[in-house]
Amino acid sequence: ADADSGAPTIFDKIIAKEIPSTIVYEDEKVLAFRDISPQAPVHVLVIPKFRDGLTQLGKAEARHEEILGHLLYAAKIVAEKEGILDGFRVVINSGPTACQSVYHLHLHVLGGRQMKWPPG
Ligand code: 5GP
Image 1 (cartoon, rainbow, N blue to C red):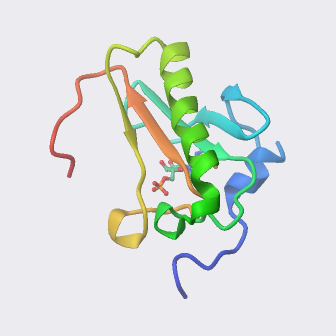
Image 2 (image 1 turned 180 degrees about the vertical axis):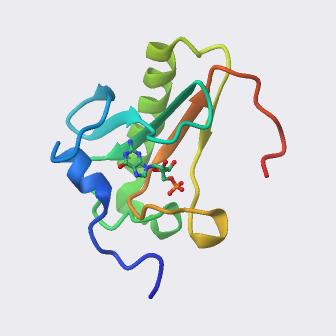
């Protein structure tokens, strides 16, 4: 099966609060919560509450411009709330080759330690 089947993901259950998460920031359009498997002292996922076909960045269309901008600004708010505004990283894995595992677009906000470049 295609990794991106378009089927609902576990993030829908997190949005619906059917499964618990530690929410860091929320507004009417986006939810930000701690990654269950943190790769840094701060590791927060920022997702749109309404996926609207945005299973992965590689499937974005013109109608998604506004939510994409909102997600990026929400990442900055998260960094501010988490005290990492002096240095943080925002990552989007798009597609299987990039190791995307959940097909509901999400930004990883990472910080609280020295990052390395290039990423693996
Ligand atoms: P991806 O690999 O698709 O870029 O990132 C998916 C992320 O979702 C991973 O970092 C993984 O740890 C996280 N994740 C998967 N399932 C859950 C869950 O049930 N709760 C939370 N908080 N994070 C999850």
